[in-house]
Image 1 (tube, one colour):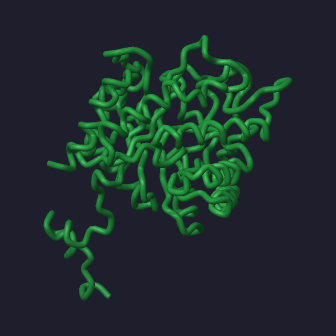
Image 2 (image 1 turned 30 degrees about the vertical axis):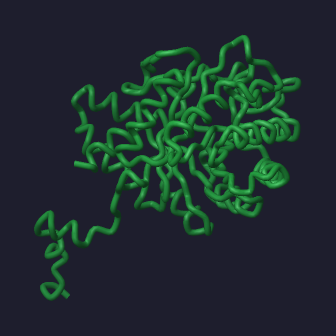
Length: 325
């Protein structure tokens, strides 16, 4: 139908492009993953993740206040557990005075409006670095679910708004939901890592928490990256079991999965732009091979365009600063 339809008419100026833009990104879309360390006034840089730190609770609270001022309204928190507290049961994970529980309370006291979603998995607490209890080289499902349920209850008791099981054990969402209801935590939500793939993009994260598996890999419980239909099945099962939000992880390399899951479920979809994806952009930008800010915003827009309602990203603070300008 040319020249009746000239698609370029809608691209002539930035004002025109903004007027018809389909995907709009704001700080409200972001969740910031944070690593918490023992001590006071502690800030330890993570070499493989430039600009990201393990911080003690006091400095974490300071950072949370700044994030809130920028419009970032959710944090996903992880703890670096001392080696002497690790075992094969994960019992430190539900210690009411544990580092995670103290962090939840401190953040909620300082910024009550911030949505706090602590990670629920045993790998930071495990002597084996796996997400579950180990027996004869096997990661046990049902005993692990029991441990994750106790962990989730302790997070709820500490004041968490959501719990975020990232372990990929079967049936854990239903067990956690039942336990939360039975213990009066009716308003505590579950953000389930529903389609979490056994990915090589997680390397820098494991450096951050010293939680790399001590033997083998995580392929017996995390998903095969060659699979697509399985992700839909996992997400639908988690929704049936009571998940309020489902997550796809990693992000930019899995946008086909994001769209498939978004089309299949009737709950919000979260996407985790993981440590390796972050590190790749940082490394290429340091080499001068890519424009850091342009690539960062392009990737975040693409993740949202694919169907993400929430983007968990280490770029959250930097992107919020740019978007606020």
